[in-house]
Amino acid sequence: MPMNGLLRALPSVHELLDEPEILELASLTSRDYARERLRSAIDELRSEILDNALDVEPESLAREALARATSGGGRARPSLRRVINATGVVLHTNLGRAPLSDRSIEAIVSVARGASNLEFDIETGTRGHRDAHCESMLVDLLGCEAAVVVNNNAAAVLLVLNTLARGGEVIVSRGELVEIGGSFRVPEVLERAGCTLREVGTTNRTYLADYERAITESTSLLLRVHPSNYRIVGFASRVAAGALAELGRRSQLPVVDDLGSGCLIDPAALGVGDEPRAQDVLADGVDIVTFSGDKLLGGPQCGVIAGRAEYVNRIRRNPLMRALRVDKMVYAGLGATLAAYVEGRAEQEVPSIRMLTASVESVRARAVAFAARLNAAAPEFGAEVLAGRSVPGAGSAPGLDLPTALVVLDHPSMPADELDARLRASEPPIVGRIEHDSVVIDLRTVRPDEEGELLEALLRLA
Ligand SMILES: *Cc1c(COP(=O)(O)O)cnc(C)c1O
Image (cartoon, rainbow, N blue to C red; front, side, top):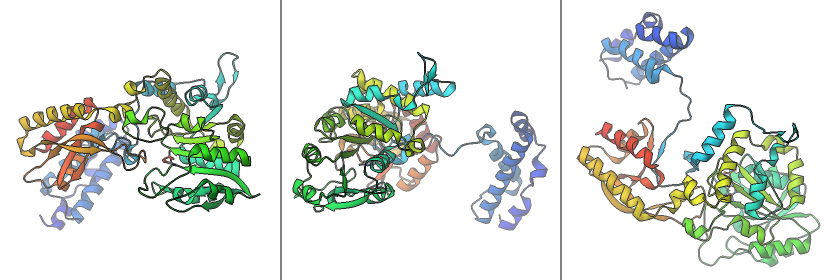
């Protein structure tokens, strides 16, 4: 159909306003909302016609407009949606990082629904402090004096530097001046915190003597940064946290370690090798550590600042604290996640920990069963199970990966990028990855109760 014919046949809002579907939508919502949905459906059709991207007969245009206006029950749809993470990247920054435990979700729902003691002391009936929430569990787990929670780890680093080193010099190893995720660059954060960067050592090797020589009257703080998303192999060395802490004590300077991931349990059990545990770094004498709540910890997005009370209390009083603080839902989700650690149940309860600790045999068993179901119903996908690698993600344990079993899909008439795009267009969208020209699905990061949706989506494409 030539473009002009379609454009001429495109109905107006006015012509469709009294169709039964639109009247019904208007009765469920409002007349204005129904009219707006209709208008945007018609606009969408018009631009598809102009792009030559619409393949319908002119007499079907009205039906198409009505269907689009009332799709999804005619409900307004926010842009943030659930997706199925079949990438095998457990803590996928672009897919929202850590999935929360049922207990965390229930805790969030319960404070979200109504009032809570966010800033209220239930015993005395007087005003309380929000920053006391989660502190005692963090202090117990980390064996430190005090802790405070802010919006994310970037905020934690900014706040610590701004409180303890504003107007002074901060000494950092050249090998640790990292960029994380494009927008967090250590030198830039330092500058915004009002500090001057004093780089020491070289990219691959920095010694304690390098820090020692750089200390002057202007030095305010010694900073160590976990090089989260890269790893120097070969001729490389960093100064150990304990040695830097000792230098800090001798020089009467605070020593801060930005750990990034915040691992609290045996990293070997998680397959993340030599990732430092936050409590060990504090035990080594570091004054303050900072880490994310939604990386290896497996909780909601937030940043934890923990260590010496003298410093944490100054941080709490920084006026920026108000701008960087977290809401009741974060305290609820984090509190429930930490409770699992306090009870020694993190490996059973925290989903990201469960995904990381799942054995390759258990992932393979799921993959084999899934491939068999798919092959029985839609053999054209040629599903096969092959060995592959999953990764922890979110800058945890750079360079490390976990053995996994992948479901490899090879459709004879659907190239990998097309199948990948169609899976992303499913409801809910499914995000896999492409390897060697095939779409691969890693069930390590898919919840068992999502497998049915995944299978149905593939069958719809068959
Ligand atoms: C991830 C990371 C950050 C940023 O943490 P967010 O929680 O994403 O703000 C900062 N420093 C290090 C070392 C990190 O790994």
